[in-house]
Image (cartoon, rainbow, N blue to C red; front, side):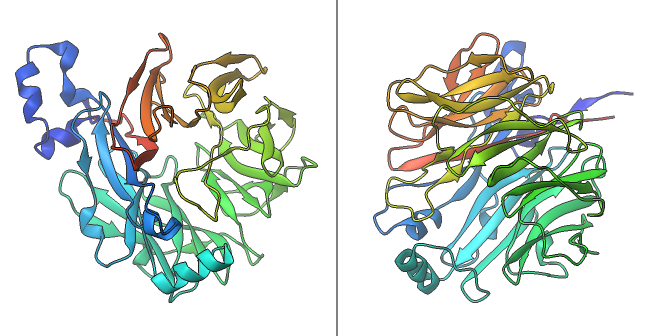
Length: 400
């Protein structure tokens, strides 16, 4: 019996580790075992607005040490005005989850003029693809037995890799779905109501789900039944995240642009505020030109051991990364130049490091922060006028 660590071996299979051969005798530089990070690169300063820049988005992977950067899923781009965005991994680390969007220029002009989204079947499409990083094969899983022209949020159901979850926009309302990993047997979990809105996520054991609808957080069984609303008394509650042990749910709660990390137990009880973002609006701009949508939500995330939470908050003249213990003790982890922002924390599978985004150089780059030494190394080096954002760690799965 043997166990094979999959992290980084994708590069070996796809021939990207030729430069690692020279380090074969040096275990300190064994790049073949470095896990990968998926992210999205795009233009940020094209003058025409959101549409012109968003349509430049392309998915990439890079090693943990910042080497071997490579575009993935390029074959998904089959028509003008479409783009890809990295959205996650399969549990075994072999497949990347890649979103593929398209919008018509006419619809984009309408949105810019009216400063709001307009999702119509002839103006938009969005699907979720699985990309095998060894073979290069791509599979549009949401197009099988299609239920919507706009499908997002694909994830592998915890403890059941043969099942996927995603969210489909139907008649202007987002519905949560389960389906087989081949895209068949799509099941709407709405149970005849007006639908779930955003933030659909299953608990680690797969038995419960969390979501927010009309900016209120709900917990339910995996089939959508036995729904419990988390009574916060606040008008804005956003993006619930299950703890690694499935016993707690983390989300932000408060007013729009003035909301803070909160925790609640698995059954919806014992609500408590974990920390304060000190005036931080919780939205990071990802373009250098006007964006009618305002930016990308910057939400707290769990540490791998479930004993703490990473989040960003105002301190001095910058937005910095903090760690909060479950009893509310705070530790500042980054110290950036005045006027800069740190955002989108993403913990490594082993809990040793965390990726953060920062605009401290004037360009939106990704950085790798060692949680023990607090040493910070650049992970990307995109040129000015570009951005690198929305990182996802490859799972360090092992197979016998």
